[in-house]
Amino acid sequence: ERRNPGEDDFRQAVRELATDIIPFMVNSDRYARMNILERLTEPDRIITFRVNWLDDESNVRTNRGYRIQHNNSIGPYKGGLRFHKDVTLDTLKFLAFEQTFKNSLTGLPMGGAKGGSDFNPKGKSEREIMVFCQAFMSHLYRYIGPNTDVPAGDIGVSHKEVSYMYGQYKRLTNELTPVMTGKDLAVGGSLIRPEATGYGAVYMAENMLATRGDHLEGKTALVSGSGNVALYAVEKLIQKGVKVLTVSDSSGTAFDSQGIDVEKLQWLMFLKFERKGRIEEYAQAFKGVEFLPDKRPWDISADMAFPCATQNEVDEADAQTLVANSCQLVSEGANMPTREEGIRVFQKNNLLFAPAKAANAGGVAVSGLEMSQNSMRMSWSREEVDTRLQGIMRTIHEQMLEHGKDGKTVNYLRGANIAGFIKVADAMLALGVI
Ligand code: NDP
Image (cartoon, rainbow, N blue to C red):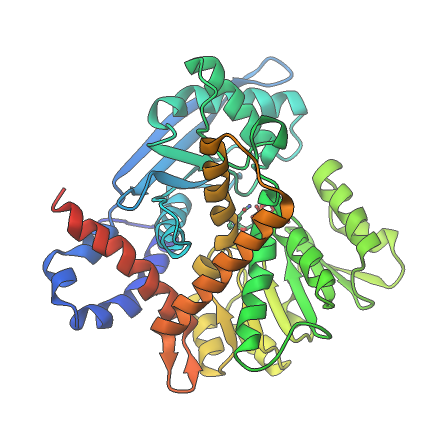
């Protein structure tokens, strides 16, 4: 509290982990003696910088840039960049903390980091976005490198922005070295990277249902958000025979009681990825779709929920409503979308609940595969990458079972926390007090 004043999201993320790790450490003296948990609550390094850029009217604009290098005990720092008006140090510290354990769960050698800016891409021209990305990288480039820190995208940063920043890195260093993932295919990106987080959250749901002898086909689902994670989760759910009832954005929810089909999804992808339109337009374009202004999807009755927009978008009351409406499963595509009280409601009611650090690890896992492909100077087919992604999600699920089994039920959050922690903690022990 005293060391991180006002950083509610960061402290929430630490509490969510510590609640499981403190009892676990009681039986493991070596972690406690080496003060591993406290060391992990302090990022290795926090870098902030001023970003000046010229808008289309030739005004100089100023934003703040950040990179939080949280822990690199198991591999180079790795984590996305977020461009959103509400970005603060608190947001990025919680995301970098979570990223460390998520990356550990993938089994790939990647440390944890996060970065970004309070730059708001909404309403900016193509030129302004490129100029901002270049200005941002003009500061960041000296702190990153293929063996040091490998950033990627997140909210407001797609393959386009990643590629602009990558271009600026090339200009500044005269090296086309793979220092970023989530790049455009034309400059060394991986197939399935854009899809990976959303697909992964659905694969996780499939694995959890299988423990109850159940499957996805025929079920209904609520999805929040309509960005990269949400729309590819919708795509995979449709492929698996699930009826998806909602998508949303920060202005409200579109409720499609008929279910989103392949054609409507294509329309949505064009709306969101190309035209940058609002979700209300979906309700205007298709009969039977209702727009619920300023509402999140959680009041609608469905078998499963996939929060894929942002942090703290499911509170205690939302969780109670989902349970009352017989929701059986929650797979978190976004980072920390459920508040602690909401998680307790899911756990008390024995829902299949996959926490973000496990359920959305597919994105960074394929980023790890992008790094492998880049260093081998080759690219794998869609099938190859997708098969590896499914294998990684299965292995994450198995690790959660191993550490989260509680008699007949599974505490997936505890499983993810302990499995993610052990690998990082063991590496820190091996490296000594540094
Ligand atoms: P995008 O920018 O593509 O989409 C974000 C979506 O969430 C948009 O629909 C946006 O609506 C909505 N949203 C953002 N902020 C808010 C808010 N405060 N309230 C309501 N809705 C909001 O981002 P991504 O899809 O990439 O990321 C979504 C989540 O998934 C984030 O939590 C991110 O950290 C996490 N994640 C992403 C990964 C990836 O590979 N991209 C990997 C792992 C996790 P609007 O357009 O109105 O702002």
